[in-house]
Amino acid sequence: MSTEDMRAPEGIPTTAGPPFVREFEATLPVHSQFVLWGNRHDSFLVRESDSARPRLLSLPDLLWETLRGSGYAFLLVHDPVDGLRVHLPAGATAEESDRAEEAASRLLPRRPRPGSLPSLETLRALMAELARPAQPVRAALAIDDASRIARSAGELEPSERDFFRFCARLSRTAVPVGAQSGRTTPLYNPVIWLADREGDLPAWLTSSNDQIRSIGLPVPDLGDRQATARLLMKLFGVTDLDSDLPATEACEAFAAQTDGLTLQAMIEITRLARDRRLTMTELPDAIRIYKLGVMDNPWKREYLRKRITDGQHSIPQRVVGQPQAVTKTLDILKRAALGLSGAQQSRSSDRPRGVLFFAGPTGVGKTELAKAVSSLIFADESAYLRFDMSEFSAEHAGDRLIGAPPGYVGFEAGGELTNAVRQQPFRVILFDEIEKAHPRILDKFLQILEDGRLTDGRGSTVHFSESVLVFTSNLGTEVEDDGGRPVTNVHPDMPYEEIEARMKAAIGDHFTRVLGRPELLNRFGDNIVVFNFIDRAAAARIFGLQLDNIVSRVHEEQGIVLEVEPEVRAALQKSCTDNPRMGGRGIGMALESQFVNPLARALFDRDPAAGAHVRVTALRREGDIVSVELA
Image 1 (cartoon, rainbow, N blue to C red):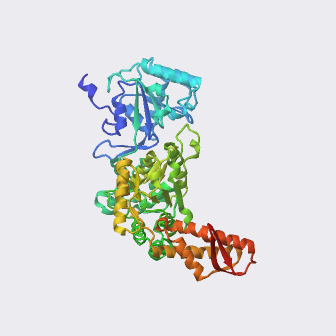
Image 2 (cartoon, rainbow, N blue to C red):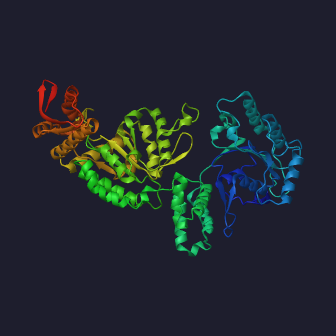
């Protein structure tokens, strides 16, 4: 091969475009068809020289400029909406348009008229003329939205199967075309399939076929986002970014906060900011609106700081006997309210606003504290969403969270978790008894905890950056001995510091040794909040609150003023709080069986009128049957 053959073609230099287009350009001599799949609707950054300003091009424009630089006369594009057309960028001159149309008419004299929707049979004939040209003219055909050609890549109709069989054979019989100048090496006139996913085309079309090259189009990296952010800053009146420190910082933050988004999304976010009259320093608000689709941000409400401050007094009244757990939870919420979650990272983080792992014995207030957090932050307990992870013990149950994959029953419905967060991004999400979930389902939380986003079964991205995630677990209350038998690990007589140390050690052992998921444990970090057993004083307070709730409910439902004599109250308290291991839930269960049930029986038999004053004067036990005496 001569030196002339190796030089870079005119048009876009081989080092200017994204890696995938450089791969495409370099392999034109050896592949007759290409499958470009993935991020095909994005804008793509082209750096033509160190001194020139980078440009943003659509995929068809990028392909055409690359092909033109390699000596191609025109790019034909077919899509199911606009039909067949010769593609030219928006700024093309009339001369360029006439030259491309003339070349297309010369090479493909029987091509359908522009804008028509050719059948698969007509498209086959067109591809054949292009792949084995009668004249030495270089041209390419891009089939846009190729994912929609077949109803199902795995279940082709006869006409679809015949079409793709023809395409597979054509890829092997295509003839490369030489040129008199420029890039004189023979190059194929390629068919370029533009698809959403690689699997949208039949697998047998590309498998074991060296003539068809599959190239993925990834989302842009940080470098591309930084360059794009610098381009977009001029919309805010910034002309010399290098000498404007606030603009430089805003630019860097913009690039970091759009991790996972496309360059086109960055353009749309900038337009949104301009429409909302936001400054460049307020771009994070525009990003949030773009991702979540909501204007109001509860985390920035003026009264939030006061609510959290008040919560230091109100939550201990609601979650009794857990001062350490309440204090640590409020510390994490303060950090979230100030936007300092993940502040130790070198770049801006889209992680959830708060992550809490509540560990402790049953009935000590873990779920109640999660509800209290929801009420405190969002002033609405309906923002609390609970998943009982014991229902997700089977691997396939994970489809309930994010939705079934394409082709499976229920695919259109989406997932319970992703749908709920998409509808209301500001939530407290409780995953109760997380240790009962299948390990494969736990893997789904890795992306949420690290990146604050999750892709559902329909391919849509759901953002958790404004949510608080709460995981609860009984891990550590029991451990296995050397024989694999469960033994008690903590008990009520231990000091809290020892309970905390033992529980955390057991949780760490479970995630690392049993599950083999140390990376998930690392995502929780120091957000593991250990709850203590309910002591006698706390049990008495819980009993008093629950008994008062019963008295209030009788008045609300029946209009009866109920009074419980001190002797009855004391006897009930002693019998309902004698087992601290059962926690607050155990107290409630004991109250229901020993007081609510006999009270309901007595009220039902007596049937007092609304407004009556009824006193409970005594409890009577006959075996397992408890009765109350009313006066």
